[in-house]
Every structure is written in C-alpha cells, then in structure tokens.
Amino acid sequence: MEKISTPITIVIPVHNSEKTLEAVLKSLSSELLGGDELIVVDDRSVDRSREIASLFEAEIIPSSGNPGAAGARNTGALAAAGEWVLFVDSDAVAPPGWRKKLQQRIDQEPSAVQATYSSLAAGKNPATFYKNFYYFYTFTRRIKSDYITGCGTFFFAVAKSIFLELKGFDDRIPGATVEDADFAARLVGSGGNILMAPDIEVFHLREYTFSELMGYEWKMMKSKVLYILRRSRDHAAPSVSMATPVEMLPVLSGSVSVWLIPVGLIAFAAGSLWGMWLAAAGFLILAVGHAGFWLASVRKAGLIGFIASLMTLPDLMLILPAALSGVMKHLTGRKY
Image (cartoon, rainbow, N blue to C red; front, side):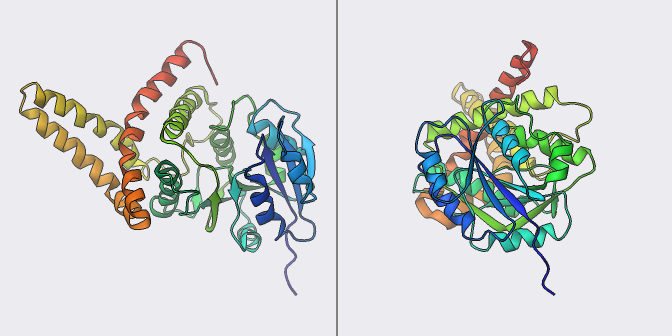
C-alpha cells in the first residue's frame, strides 16, 4: 500500500512581491497533493501581489502581527490546517520534484527540514552570483552533518505542533534578519532537530548590486551580534549560521586575517619591511580558508565568478566593524 502523504501548508509572506511571486507560486502549486494548502500572507503590500496570488487559488490573508517576515509567517502558521508548515520566501523558486523529496525527509521524523540554495543565480550580476553561490558552497561543501543547528526560512518546513509549542518566530525582530536563527536555537534547545535536504535546491530570484549586498551583510552582522547578546539562557548555542562554528572557521579566521593585508601594506609603505610579511601572512590565512570557494566560483561562472570571488575581501572586512557596531548598539540599550 502506498504511504499517504503528510498534509502540508505552504506559507509565503509577501510584501510588494509582484515581480517574483508568480514564478514562486507556479513552482509550488504544480506539485501540491490532496490535503495540502497554499497560504499567501499579505504584509501590507501596495502592488499587484494579492492579484497574482489569486490566480493560483491561494488563500490570501492579511498579516496580523508586527510588520515584517516573522509576523507574517506566524499569521500564516496559525491559520494552517496541515500537519507541517512549509515557509517559502516570495523570491524562492522550488525545484521540480520538491514535494516528493520533502515527503521523504518528513518520513524520517525530524522536527524540521531545511532546503538549500541552488548553485545558479538570477541575472549576470557578480554580486548576485556571489550571494547565491557562496550560500550554495557553504551548504554543499562546509556543512557535513545531516542535521544542522540553524535554519533559513527561504524554504523551511517544521511540524506545526512544534512550531506552536515554541510560539513561532519572534516578531519583535525587525525585517528579515535573524528571526530564523532565533527560532532554530529555541527548537534545538528544546530537544528538536533540523534535517538537511541537500537535494532540494532553491533558485533565488532576488538580484543585488554590490552596494546592496554590502548593506545587506552589514545589517545581518549587526543583527546577529544583537541576537547573541540578548539571547535567553533557554536557547541552544547561538545559531547565527546553518554551519557549525568549526565549519565556519574560514569565515571567522578570514574576518581577522583580511585586515592584516592593508595594515601590513601600510606599514611597508611607511618603511617597515615586516609589513610585507604581515600582509603575506594575512593573505595566506585567507587563501587557506577560501581558495576552494574562489576556484569553484571561477569554474562555475568564469569572469563573473572571478569578480565575485574578489568580493570575499570587502565582505570579510565589514564583519569586525559591523560586529562592533552591534555591540555599541547593545551597550546603548538596543535589543533588536
């Protein structure tokens, strides 16, 4: 006898997403099974998002929480009839076969299931390629365990009973930053687990300019620091990434070693010969952790991949000042 599928409710938070929503809904609705449902939560959109959602017979409800992705997701989850809730971003296109693959993971009885990034990126912008391919590379090369301690709500499924028990996402967290990290820490801290689904590769439609990407990374780092400083003792270890601290060692070491390069070059220009050795040491440490990503980027996208690999340098350089900015915000009383 064929196993009966687990009913799922897809929840898509939407805020002025008319440019990407149709492709997202098309990829999801084509594979829904009996008992599944599709909910679009409108978070104060003023474009055609609601009109587009209606074309796919999605249930459209207004967000009743605080403005932002967390409040919209909570609204959808509370209205969900499915045994599992699948959160999908309004710019994330699910790959063919996603429903069957998700069911296979659910049948393993985890608390939650996490998809991964596609190696492909929208458009031909080096900044967009860097953002997508870096996440893809981290998922596929650095994360070695089947179970992870973080999550990314671009395509994240969780048992509804567990979601309600944990009281959902913290909608005091503004925008779309670390509400997923906070939830994952509470889930793991309560004894739950998050199973990776590396064969569900989600294609992201959002594109970035270089300045937009750096602004995004700056905001995320400040949010992560504020989260770590305010987190409750009933949380598990801070879940600022889906990779473990050991798996993220190239980033942690790179955020320090990258600064040795300009400091060494300045010292050398001022007449200190040791400055060149300092710069060389910084680059060597950086290369040990990132050469694999640089080579993979070039193989994947040629010149665009090469330009994108250079973005590792400014991306790593902003980590320390952004983290310091978060600490200063915390000391002045800011929590979120």
